[in-house]
Length: 178
Image (tube, rainbow, N blue to C red; front, side):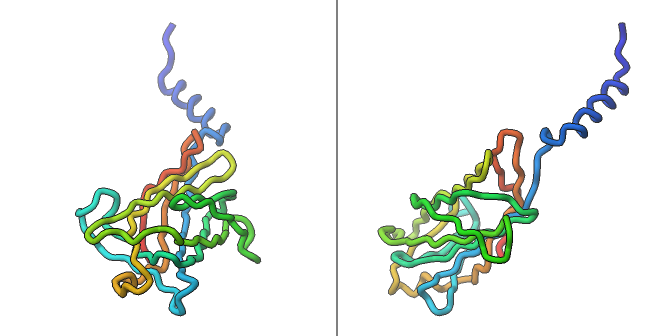
């Protein structure tokens, strides 16, 4: 008995088209960080090249400050929790934006300034129903009085192109900074 390879391939494709749950899903996640205690709301970053293993960029943050984080996904994804640098943050749906747009307040109280020449990887974990995004952010924390914390390129937002695999794990395939 011989099997027609083309027919088997065609049957396989038809089966995959009919069962769309077996196909990975992509979306774009925009993450905006604003210092809500600073009148300028600025968050900055610096280019580090290949000096550090996590990223070529370092996000500069201030200790003992509050930041507003705004998350927007397109197409819209439903998320239920955000865990950032050891803090569980409440995700609040953005008014008038519908599903897929959330904000949270993150307080960096208790985080010590990063030593000179060092970087601190903080864990960003975003969860939705049966899906989880886990990503390290390369950061450097500065004291409130240290002017180096605001010197650098302005960070409007991080834009991640994401893909949800069949196990619900969300992978970041590409990152851009606005």
